[in-house]
Image (cartoon, rainbow, N blue to C red; front, side, top):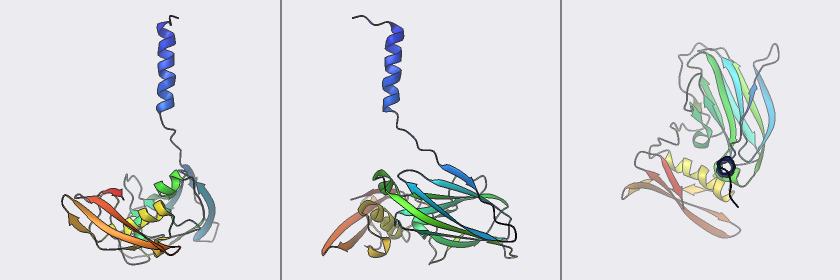
Length: 222
């Protein structure tokens, strides 16, 4: 049977569309405080590769508090400053609570998401996101976690940040809370950095390694 060029072109287009992965769209929401208040708590839920981007306006010099309480240990939030392409604060590295002086006026985006391994498994996270903004006269500073500071992004980690990032990856991969995971200090092995970790579950100990490139970017978990 002979097929026309138009039929072949249509078949190729349909085949190509089947090979293109479906990209989930983040849900965008604008946060408004009730009159006379300086904060709010939002209840939400995400599943798989879903995420919610909460936009909140703030002025330079104000203090912003963000706290995420979730029933899934692989759920975190990032904060992105107005006009920025990289996260100003990364919860998977620094934890799910921060307080900082707003460096510049505009709309900040708080993005709630699941780590990729949990997303691939189709897990669900039910959460409460508390946002609070108060006036302040302090000099602007970068956001700091409520716990010991850890700065940086997954694309550019230093040796001190690699263990905590590795714990987050292991938490998503094995379904274990980060608090139950022990990760040792990172060290160089040939042309990469590695940090070794383990956790106990049901009487058995699981060991793993996180590998990082020399530029600080995450490579793999094995």
